Image (cartoon, rainbow, N blue to C red):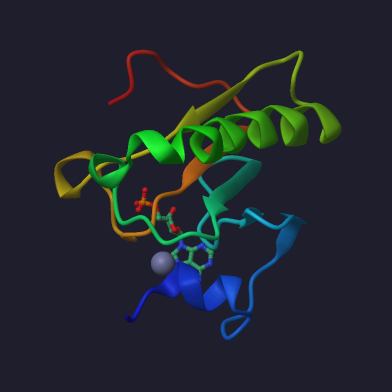
Length: 113
Ligand code: AMP
Ligand code: ZN
């Protein structure tokens, strides 16, 4: 399987990794849309949110908790931050290994464009 984010997990492709544990890795987005733009991904390959199953529930929850912890650690929790997961092309998904975007450091419009 040829997956960009699996290659980053396997350290075959470099990334600016800010967090790693046995289940999850987080690294800086190569084309940041905000002063802080991290991607938080499971080490398990799951292509899209549509492919997430009941037994992934803990892992999916962990992605959110790591987003919260990183936002706090990096000083963005009080001002606010946004987490986004795009599912499939219509929502803008371009890398088909699920990832949570953590964005902070500027104001975000709501609703999104
Ligand atoms: P999405 O469009 O939701 O699938 O998000 C994919 C994200 O991956 C985009 O924000 C890209 O800028 C980012 N991206 C693509 N290639 C890399 C890479 N090699 N390292 C870090 N981020 C990447
Ligand atoms: Zn993958």
